[in-house]
Length: 405
Image (cartoon, one colour):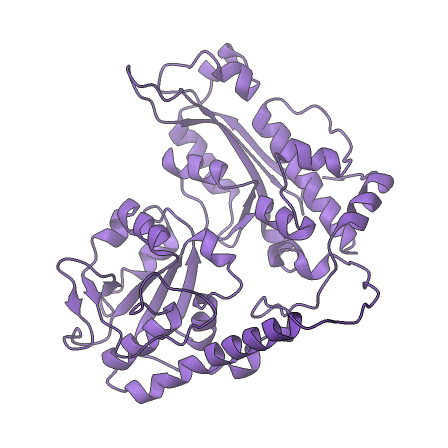
């Protein structure tokens, strides 16, 4: 798919972007507070599976990524719904490494004093307590696992982020304590804290410096490149831009309640121009406002394929390493809650736009208008129009980054 961009609008957008900072692509932190030099590699008999809430993945001082970089047998999965994830299901199905969930509450065994016998797959949920509770509650594949918990034997060193209670610790500190108990060698896992110490000290030093008066220096030219999501620069061939629309009934105090159901799903693979565009017939009664909202007529919606057929066709369209890119979480959550399965690789382009512009993005239509993107060839349906718009936004960002088309 070729995309033309209006130079004048794009240049104005680039001038309004914030000053660029040198970033480390490994830890995704500014070079001035990079902690990669302190990373250590610790082999384990335990397989570690970290399930991270998407909002926590954007926290610059989180420790889950740090832990995944230190532990060769650790994997980091970002998302909210996991029951239909083949990657997570495969990670939890090894009979030689039975899965356990690190989660407090009634029935949880103390992992420090009563660890399981033999190697295990340790599942750790990363996020705020509210986010973590949502993930465990909404995913039976996780909620059904045997639960273990612990009380931290020492206070947290996480001085740059406030925990809800004094005895709470960060994800990497929890792994340090738990892996030490599981593998009978607590001293060996103290090295997990080295990059955390480096991050804390660098952040405190940077904060202290930033409070001092500084001489004015000319702003370097913004290049966009280091702020772009890695998927758009390093894995562009795996990028799939998606948009979905629903038959959505209003939430009423009385009367029948119908959950939003997927009726139109569109995907574009910008690197090759491949397109997926399928309408699914609604199972619930069609809401009166749905045709006008999704920009498809009643007859077109009712003539759609069964939803199972849409899911099967899209599974054939996808590749295992694809990165699904959407504007906000609604489309991907709608697809999964309607019964579909998506790859683990995700990229929220709305969050990426906020990082690039340093301000609220508004709707996709408003954002594209501010970038002065040209009109496309009249795609049919709101989902098709929005998916096409995402492709043009991604092309504009790559142009600003100086990446050849």
